[in-house]
Image (tube, rainbow, N blue to C red):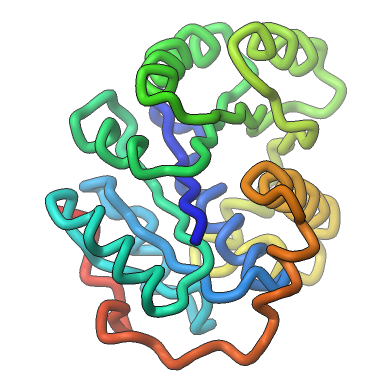
Amino acid sequence: MHVITFASQKGGSGKTTLAGHMAVQASRAGAGRVCLIDTDPQGSLSDWWNARAEETPEFVHTAIASLADDLAGLEGLGVNLVVIDTPPAITETIEQVIALSDLVVIPTRPSPHDLRAAGATVALVEAAGKPLVFVVNAATQRARITGEAAVALSQHGTVAPTTVHQRTDFAASMIDGRTVMELAKAQKSAQEMSDLWGYLANRISGDRQTFLGAHAAARPAKSPMVPTRAAGAVG
């Protein structure tokens, strides 16, 4: 089982949107059984999942104190991927989540303030000895600062080759529990999500085809740990 965590000290970086989109895209790409965990007290990811009509990805309500045990339990139940959203602050919660992660994704908007704020998150990930990936998010098409941001971030870690551009598609889809992949007229945004997931899948698995294709069998029934509806964020 793989655990991908989305973390950023800066609020509004797009963690929740990307976490939800990557979980859905992973399911659509045949990554097997995918679960979401929301550790942000605001519960935005939980709210999105509660509004979602589709049964995948699944949602797990847990607590930080039992997170390690619950992750082990999910692996035993046949879960292949867990995607975790975190609060927009450097807290003990984030430290504990990062310590249990296989990969930490740091979404960063291409602005000086966001670039400066990324340092605290990077320090936390490096202290835990975990691999990280920056994702330039909410970029303006053909804006010079987008390229400059990627160059600046590359001095501190790997930058995903896919830039996610600012479009109303993302906000529109998240309102009712969907993603841009599930909108008829959001092909560009959907392609970015497909490309980004493909890259992240490569990062967490040495053999992408094994990870994406080996679990494409029928989805198992939901476990007792996965509620029909999300009970909220981690307490």
